[in-house]
Amino acid sequence: MLHTFILDFLVYCKAFKFAAKSLETLSVQLTEFDHFINQLSIHNIQDISYLHLTAFVARHRSPSIHIQKQRVWTMRKFFHYLKIQDIIKENIAASIPYPKIAKKVPYYLTENEFNELLEYATQKANNLTGLRNLIIFMILGLLGLRLKALQNLNIEDVSLHMGTLLVQEKGAITRRFYMPQILCAVLAEYLKLLNLSDGPLFLSKRKKRISERTLQLVFQEAMAHLKIDKHLHAHLFRHTAGTLLNKVAGPVVTGFVLGHARSENTKIYTHLNPDQYAVYMKKHSYHSG
Image (cartoon, rainbow, N blue to C red):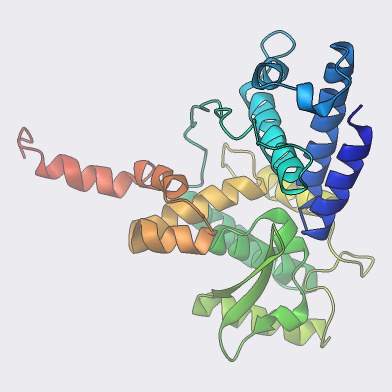
């Protein structure tokens, strides 16, 4: 019953440059919703009620919090579209509450662990591939870029004169990052060896844009040579960047660098700051020292 509306809605989302992951989520959840509505023998979109929507969000036995969140988000977006297209009079999904997701304290590399990783990568940086890997670790651990943003970097995005890096982030957002001097210095050496004026910044051995699989192999090789008891992946580096930056710059700057739209997303890095905790405990009225 909803098939045509769903197809039109997905075309609308593509026109507004929704991310590929978001389009996939919308498509999957709306297909399930269409099946759910058909099982109820509802033949008119006007007959869909708020109770039908909440029943769909909770359908199946104990759906995960993340699935529920996806369904709420999908319903809100879809019914908003139906309203602005005058297909329905009211967005009945607007008041569906999002489930609360308990935030877990993420893993991150300590300053010593990150330095150990950089020392390892520096020792290997005696050729183009080694320099590439060192810069990847530095960009991930210092700037907190997401994996896709790292992969999409081009040579022309680098301005050594300005010390900046132009980054294409999710949601088709472009942001300019200021780089530490040490990163600029290593990048200058890398670009000199690369000897190209444009194209992908990070290349595979086949001279193609670096793939996610290649990056995983780079991480695995580093883990095999280090004593760090943590699984290296892009989000671990993002948490590392947030934690280390918050120690010296505070949550406002950290939130800006990581591209957080809400300050709540940055607060977790305050809790991860062991130095702040130590300073507080030394000032505690019961501290005997």
